[in-house]
Image (tube, rainbow, N blue to C red; front, side, top):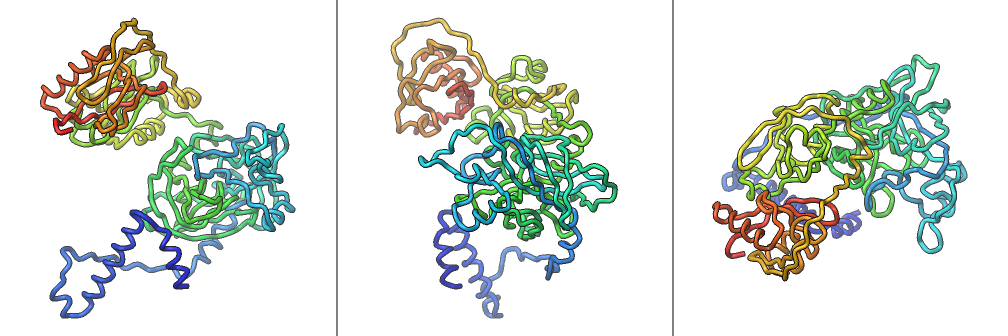
Length: 517
């Protein structure tokens, strides 16, 4: 056991290794302070005291109470159009193929088809582009009412033509999909002609990092499997999801757990298991669950209308880093910077401009772009909100009536740049290490060359970038760019706010202008 532990710990690197060293150091200090003589020499600056806590000796009573409400969900349908692989690299929503071997053969005997099913990847390592075919898949879910409403993941029932709910006692019932919400990866299904099903409730209180969680689900088709762990982190933003507010838990979650609940010690649902981080397709102790407050809100809307409606502000946004905050005189690097308002969006109609930084919504502080997206999406279309914005070095407020979010429009926003008049000019070096030419195909000036040792290169500028504005002033020539840079210096600021475009995406960057740089 000791050898195995040491072998595993050697795989930790960077900050993890530092954390281990700090932990060992803390332990040594505690041991040194155990004797009276040591206490006289080592006194903590602020003694940490912990409330008396009763550690559960068993989860058996909890599990016995909640298991009847947790179900396995088996779906059948057509492969074409099914969203098999949501998420970015190593974030698995519909988990990857099982390796060939006894476990896979065993599961396939029972009709479980994972990923591409039998055959998996082609001989060249690529997924075969086969015609549409039938599929079977399995996930988890849980009852939220006595009359047969169940919550699961959208990717579990995606494109399903038949949904079967299998209860803990083995009973099976056919269910219908009431509604799905791809944005949060949630779905509600309904079993008819029932009135007395056991069901569970959502937690009223937020979980804290370190709280116990118990996951119940159907991993690898093994229904009723229970695992336990703690909340490892909150507010995780993972690739492939526009939700960006996940609980991270270390309870074992595997293929088939998707849609299953994570409970607190009161037997209340604190999250819906939906994704894992895995370099190999299996559990490594990093799973992600949708928080219960979001699940409850979405589920109620799906039951009521079959769809989810969200507020829409109609602006492209990005985070505010320290350089950007310095460039506009903002004390804290927080808020959401507007890159471009949509032409017919509510934001532009209310007066929001490119370069505005939204710091509050109805008095609630906005920490970053994701926080603004979540805050606006949580409000109903037609709601009037008050935005606090930072513009031209001072705080202002605007009233905006939110529109209705169109998911297709939100996924991609194409901008057409009006062509600029061609003005032949030679490449012109600048004082910040970039060589500029007029942009013959659009607005601004193009970066033709960049000094690799310059601050501009360090901050991410690259050849081919179009610089549209400096300090919220449009620039169309190298002279205008240099004049704007000089204007920032003359104002006493040492960071210039640059609006740049790359590959159709508009971003703001803060460019330090210290003489030493």
